[in-house]
Length: 326
Image (cartoon, rainbow, N blue to C red):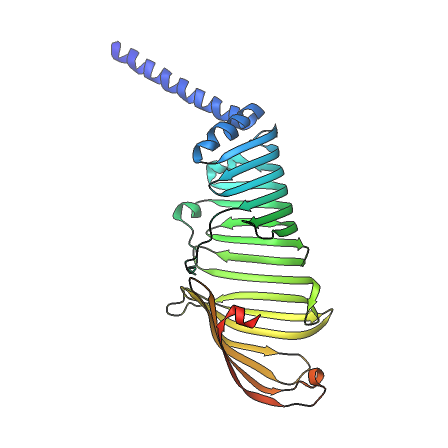
């Protein structure tokens, strides 16, 4: 009889604790007060200093935050508003399903000391835990984004919009539109962090033309890795003035530990004679970046630029820091 009583008491305690835990989860995710408690009491335990002027809605469906300020170490983030619509219950089956994420008035101040060590160009790998989850943001919208490093001039982005998905270590961004004071970018990008890969199809429209070109298209593809280079791919760039194509450039690109290597670079100008080919590398050191380039010209006609018929062929070798070319 005593044994049965103990079992009944244990079952009652377990049921009571489970009910309390479930009630707490429901309270946190479905009420404004619970969401406020989570944001203001639990999140700061992770080392994030957070303040929010106004909280509307709940974390379980539709959440609207106004006047957000967050600080982590030497980075500060300010948001005029954040709006989130999602289905958090799908997290139980390993899916983060966000219907809409809107950020307005984003200001990032980065006061971290500069790192003078040479960058290590290792392709990032997703952890096994990250690969267990899938995610999607059906609609992402960011307006008035400003990033400032210490006292430098801020980098401004007028708007950013697109759709994001994460599945089996592959991050895809589709319907991408980014607008800044310098121009506009449209297209799609995908990058693999389980198996290294990179694919992009982008169109770039500039406010101020470069060498008469106000429109560029960029395509990148991954090819097989070679030796010490963990990532090898190809890149193709076309430059146009309106609808008239003025330049085509293609190259194989290899990413080593401290350098980017260019192979079989080929530059042509549609409708004009001559081809420029090149091989080289951009090496990163603690103080500066070093560029070495071997350029070969074949049958190059510079008559439009020099007003004199030419047929130039030969080789040039460049070596030095990037500052030497400005």
